[in-house]
Length: 193
Image (cartoon, rainbow, N blue to C red; front, side, top):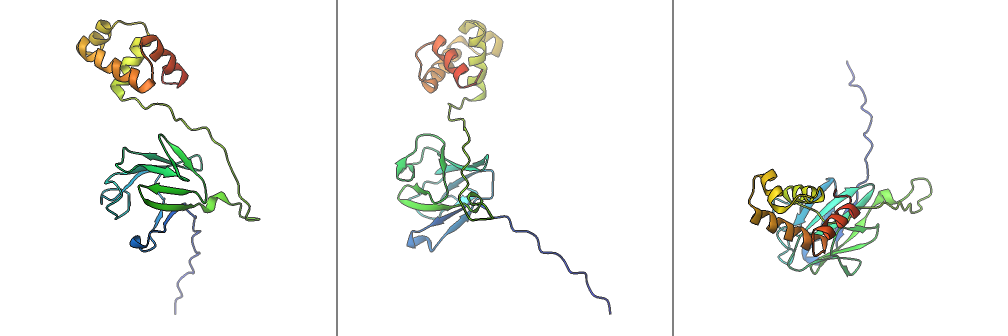
């Protein structure tokens, strides 16, 4: 009689989990496995919260440098972290409350604890909270930084001068400036160029 070899159990790696307390969700727990994923009520989100008060695509959840970062994606009812409305990427710490509109969850992050003595380990990482540019906005900013006029930028990119002006205005709005020089200065400040 041949015995099958004993297989060694695989190590279970703890993952951060969102624990929803709303009774209508029946104790929903979402394990945050993906590095970057969306959360919302629509079925094609990686993290689905089946509640009509949550937007179809409500927020992005990103794991970066050992931190959980939540970004609202223009949801109708907004996103909060520990009761504060977020306006950009925001780190959520172990035990923190994240609100997707009126629906809230607490973050359980087992990695936030040291295995030996169960004490909290806090790591501070600088995250980029600067503006995100589209590829075309990035090209326009780089060419403007080289000192090109709108006509020269248009010729370089194969678009009209009017279109370049529209991209430039979008850049000014995103960077919170009024002119080309301000856009270039903010571009350098946020390491965009």
